[in-house]
Amino acid sequence: MTSKAGAVATRTYREKLGPEILEVFDKSFNSFTDVQVLSGTHLLNLSDVVVESPTGSGKTLAFVLPMMRMLQNAKLQPKEIGALILSPSRELCHQIVTVIKPFADKLNLTVETVTGGQKVEKNIKMFKTKNVNILVATPGRLFQIIQHEKTLIARSMKSVQLLVIDEADRFNEIQFEDHMREILSCIPKQRRTGLFSATQVKEEDDLMVFGLRNAKQVKVAQEKNSAAPSTLKNYFVECPADEKTSACLEFIRQRTDKKFLVFFPSCNSVRFFQMKKKFLKQEKACVE
Image (cartoon, rainbow, N blue to C red; front, top):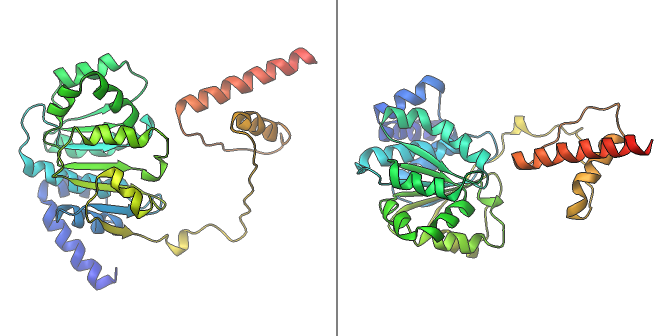
């Protein structure tokens, strides 16, 4: 956005959000990012959005802010879920809840998570006993719960006004389309839907699985001054999927004079890596 157009859009967006949401936002942030203004404005204008924006650009607040305003206006009844956010891992779900919580507390709204790592029965009990206004879930676990208690879940989610798919480019499992079809059957068709991702989400023909209608495209480019240094060298190793951990450990073992930072998709992956590292170390000691 140009500086003049951006200033007007930002001012208009602030007016749409209202004083209570801005009070919480202004305590922690000095200004909105482009993706927050663009996608938030579309959502508050009742349009679906497909958002592609780099990591660190403020994507979470890009859907949290308009979501809070929509729910503030919705006047939800007890145990009515007004917003459903789907994210690919429980770690990401908990991060999203951390962002939502201050706004939810200010507006007297409640937020809960449904992810793996808990018994399905415990999740079902939560739906039966707790007042949930915002649900943050992994699709696989929510699908499991629907298989057990579809009537209960459909009743709880009959008032969903906003569906958000966070990190949409990571939903590539074979079962995902089946999971989404079942989840969509439990929420109203008359809702807003937002897909948020750091990379290209899907081909246009594939967006049907998310139930989008005439979605607005929002694409925010990487800042030039935050691009990777030209001297940075990248390498990769191709190996069978079941040998990735061993290959990584061997790579590290051969370079004991270096320091490494290794990223994993989940807590379980980290624990498995630690266990295998410990096992291989013991095995080596036995051989010696």
